Length: 424
Ligand SMILES: Cc1ncc(COP(=O)(O)O)c(C=O)c1O
Image (cartoon, rainbow, N blue to C red; front, side):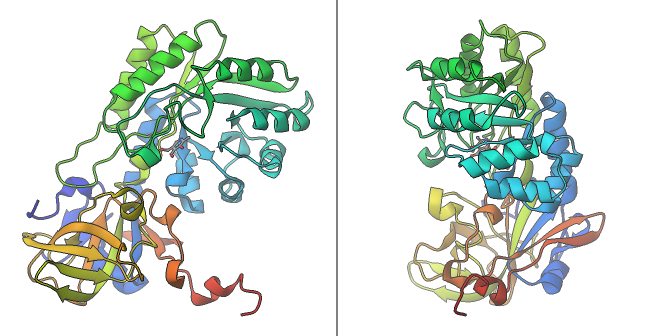
């Protein structure tokens, strides 16, 4: 854990030079001087490779879960690589459509879709609406007609407890999402949807959670779904997202291809009809490892108990450690091949003791104020969950590839932050 940063945690093709790291053929030190810090850097080739892998591994209709990371460039990239885009709110839907993704490649999720969100989806003509609950069926009944039909899936809870943090576990009975299989609610929901003119119900959907390393939970879920739909004439089964990724040294996750293979085998074993499309909605497994965050060290405080290394971002650009106790690694961009023997706590600039990015981080002994450090595997649920806490502007996002960088999202300014304040 105290050796140089493992290459496996960096985007594909990254190179450790003696005093720099190259991602997509671009120097991280140059990116920091050109765009400032904190900075999200995404390797476009890694994003495309994972998106294409998902499109190959599953059937047509497999979607990128945009909640994991969304901007116009990302929506277009996922679309170009053959994925549908899963959106969970009107805001995500709006951005994806603005990016030029055809509505016919968009899937609307959400456990509390408003009438406005449903109307926007119907008006645009989205590919699927994933119906979550009885109230939503009631809302749809007023909006849908044979002249204005929708294609949908029904979200069910299979009663499977995924091995992951309880806040990102969703397949169990006690959850706000979906119709319970065990209680009969799913059967009743299906009957109601089938009785509605204009509703075309294509199949079932389940999402058991996120950051899951063991495939057995997905396999068990597909077995349950297979049994459940055996008497129906559905043409789609969606297993949701949730495939885990390695964040720290020593972790290993199955690939998207391995995930899909295990599911295809299960689909055969449970006798899903050959024409049934096997679908999924990966988010993290497409974007996490493609991204990293660059920070500048601002102060180092050495105590007898520990050393605090404070950088110019924090819980506003990466809330995952605070939310879920998630672990990350950090490395010194100017000394990437150096051993990292110095145990430190990497913290941000926010007014909270809990503003911790890496609780038990390792850095080279020489890392000093003014140096550039990076946390790898921050491509998922970092920017998309970013906030303006303490009125800290959101970082810029750059895509790199073939030795070039392009700005995908510019850095927020103080003017951006004040735009909603009617008296400012
Ligand atoms: C319904 C649904 N699908 C897909 C995903 C994406 O999950 P992940 O990013 O873990 O692949 C989520 C994440 O919360 C989700 O709620």
